[in-house]
Image 1 (cartoon, rainbow, N blue to C red):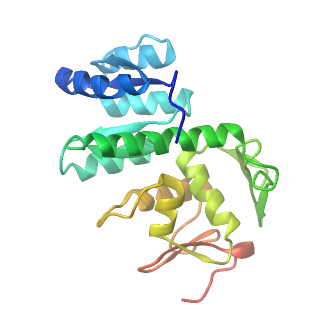
Image 2 (spheres, helix red, strand yellow):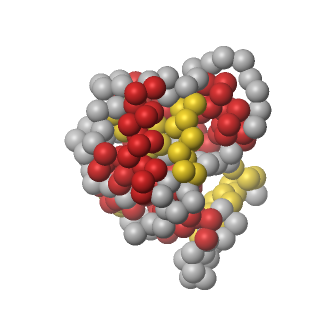
Image 3 (tube, rainbow, N blue to C red):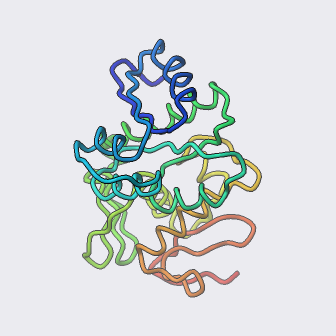
Length: 233
């Protein structure tokens, strides 16, 4: 179980009742929970900067420009478009505001555990750099290079790319990727993996219609191509 004593959380939401409920649930477990009820205050507390008013997406975008701190996004029920935009901007995971306290805790622990694992850099074998063609993914430095150029990825994107690179030439199902990276079971119509892969492709300059690196295996998942050679489907 993840040691949470001293773990600091920042909850940014204009729903004061929700903030009180979440804070009241998590603080007895050892988390230190701070709350902010608007974008400027939230970003000010996260980055120690003062900015004019803006919405949650702008908060996330500006936060990602400065920090790779893990972000668990809370969304309104049924607002799939908002979830997709949030994931594309850089959220690590999401929960509808109808979440149960058990699910909140499970997702929170997974996000924190993944962040701490990345910071710890793993053991020597797991931290060895993975090279596929011109792509180099280094768990030790948490650095991704393509043809020598450094790319900026979120924690989830890095973990996804690393998982695919380590399995180059083999198909990874969406279910397996979700379990490995988000540490949760696959849910019907869950598009989070697809959104993250789309973002990774954009950063790699990889066209899904003529992929050099990541190929979609229809109805199954994704595969990192060996030496940029597309597989026959």
